[in-house]
Image (cartoon, rainbow, N blue to C red):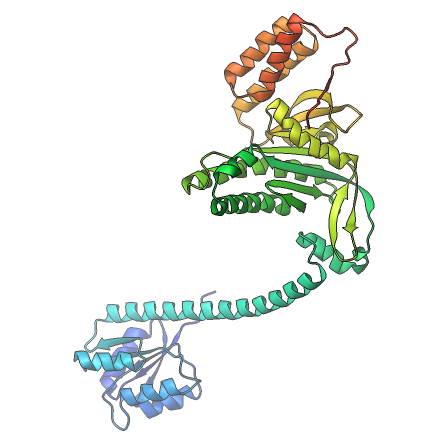
Length: 443
């Protein structure tokens, strides 16, 4: 459906000029003509034109007088006016523009140029109207948002998640202290060596670095409907599955972790380009799925919507365990089972971590299955083959196999750890009744 043509009013006391104007303009626009300024004002009582083409030298009321009246009235002030006149002096043009005309075109005019200038001015006016409309809408939205924010700050100043706020607003009883047990997924992140890096940065750069980093990482978590529990310096604690019930909370947590590693590359490029940080950041991430207590915890005056429990502690421990393996993202078997088949991972070990009695099987999450490169897939195949040899306790063959893995990627932390183990066990094998569980003494 074609859009409605714009309406122009052509004002000129010369009938020939009016006829010529109609011939030029009528193919693109609806054109009303007026032989005098008074006739123009009569038309304006019934019609609202998109633009007025106004002659200057006319009997009874000239164009200068007419535009003054147009600009004085609220209902006509915003109608754009172009002077179309035989007056060619520079002072005449200056007077016309000073009075509020958007353009000054002299006769005789070139039809194509006249049409193009009208087209441009109408486009500009249309954009101005659109911007004004958007501005008004934004002002209304800002007032509503301010009202919303003011009330939230008064009632929910302790909450960090918009989803938590919405959940509490829909059920005010949630403000009572207490909690419930749910199956959820917790994620902990930390920047490797951040304390040392912070010591060499000036305070301004340190704050900029943290703001860029925490904003980028938090946005990913929130977009996956996770809840930010707290920030501890450069570390993030978050969870998935509350207050929103998310059946796929493990998948969302794993997706967030992968996206955070991708985001880390962007952030590092930005920090180095802006000379904020002399060294790239390296994020360690731990993820676990299990039953956790979640709720509003604290005092009557200060509450925090948070999680607690052994499953939470294990996620925190895994973040630190990355240091021992040289890995990036560690997840438990429980998380991997709940997350589904959409990720590329490799099984590392069965371990006992500090503070957790029951052994757990840990995996390194490398990428989504869809995004993983051929190179990383081949690396995982080589690693898995070498690990199988290791578990069969053929230490010499395992040593050779892990050396092969490291040729493909010299920076593969887990492969280097297993290589060192194979060499050590080759010299001093473990007891025959060893259950294959490694006790990790560090946090």
